[in-house]
Length: 77
Image 1 (spheres, helix red, strand yellow):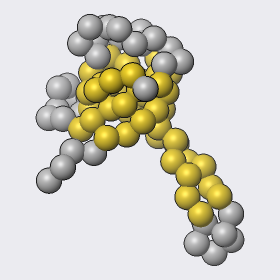
Image 2: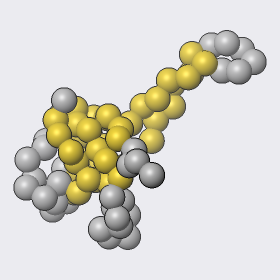
Image 3: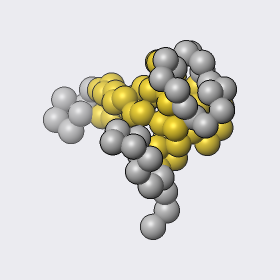
Image 4: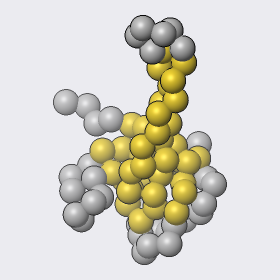
């Protein structure tokens, strides 16, 4: 099964080797036919601490690294 890749913006880089990424998705409401924006935050592994707040990054699913980290940063966009 392929690993999911998402794109989002770094909202926090305070923790060591971890960034918080806000991923926003847009979809059309099934009944109202209005574009709806929903967002979710993911904690991703950043081994070299190279990404800062405001960077746009791609994250990929991986094996669990800690209690909350199941994603790793692949690259900057």
